[in-house]
Length: 150
Image 1 (cartoon, rainbow, N blue to C red):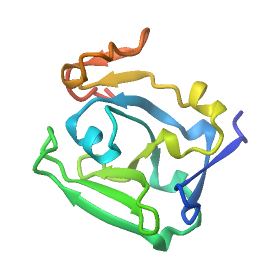
Image 2 (image 1 turned 90 degrees about the vertical axis):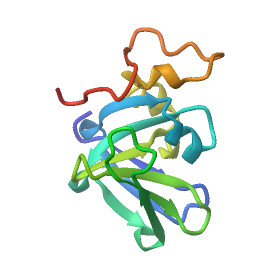
Image 3 (image 1 turned 90 degrees about the horizontal axis):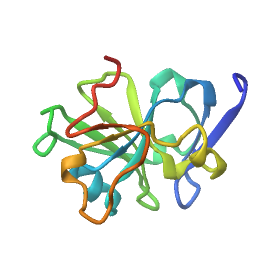
């Protein structure tokens, strides 16, 4: 697995990147209000890569960035990167975690990886999840932000 790579792309295919599967860290499902709004869904599934673990194959110049801190629980600024053509969010970066990228699992091209390497290991902001969703069995849970790296 150490030499295996995967690709991820936006809906229209204008933006595409590659990463090594061995570099995937901190896979998580987030129920926070920001992830709900920005994903237009009830939660977002994410994974983390460092800046130097991402190889942009195409369309990096097509990313539009927007950030704010008003609704972020930590008070950090979260900067979101969207494809300027189709609007797909590809990643988020927090001022509290310089060099880290929180990427969307749904953008990874090989769906088999969603059930394997990219399956969430943590569910966070459980107190704000919708009532009809009861969470993921067998993973760590946090009422707020999970203390990754601690």
